[in-house]
Length: 382
Ligand SMILES: *Cc1c(COP(=O)(O)O)cnc(C)c1O
Image (cartoon, rainbow, N blue to C red; front, side, top):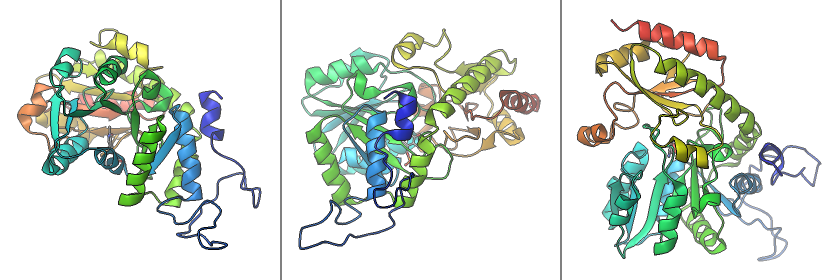
């Protein structure tokens, strides 16, 4: 099946007991057994739930994996992946990581004896220089948040294979519509389903998809043992959201292109970060591994003043100031004070995450209205 068919049909079958075309919300914690240990494949909903099982099959198909696992949040999915590790193990990751991931690495798992190295993943020599015999996981995001850097997944996969290290990719920004990390050699792909997959800003959920059966078994064991599973109602909402993922992503990418070009020519804008530009430092890699460039854009203002950024953010009418991304509606955010506030200022500025940096999650509204909104908000700067 092609992508636009998979989003609607993969893993989804009419309910055999009623013919209901949509997967029912199996709001049940337990399942009647015919005799001890004899059941219809479901025992307890922390372990398996029929609504969740359909979603997990669908997610696996979208990422060209064999097993999908869903979690109560994106962070719960990352938590489960880190629980594959032991004290003494080391992780190599990017230096412009999602703030919550940086926090769980440095404030939670660092306390359990796991060591984290944050490197510039544009530079494979730098990645290699941090490998030790204890390295167990390379953790990448691409595009990165919020600097929209592109990391070469195939190049990382070559290093990970060579050294017997797992490669995990947070594919939240790209979605399986734009990019399939498992096809490029990653071992694990993770999503904050909360964002584009759910797509309507109404659910918190995470997911992991893998190809390898043994790895899948270990993760399912962690999922069941630690218990951060999503409820069936949320699984239903995500199944519904995913049915239009391809249509939404096409429009997000179209609008993203229009808005990025508009900002690039605006006199009050200093720099625009969007991987679709030919002069983006990793445009060639983006073209190689992505099908289009999406609707996530960051930009800075001339003179880099915090007060100007706040002025712009307060004057938007269509773009809504909020955490999160990937919904049908356009959102804007201020990474330095919002998503990345937990990263020390020197660390932030080293990677370009400056005070005037504004991040846009361009929605699927009419692009003219979005441009007009940007024009008005940027005009409000004195
Ligand atoms: C939001 C996000 C997460 C965390 O997901 P939650 O669903 O909020 O727990 C992880 N990585 C990226 C890139 C994100 O945008």
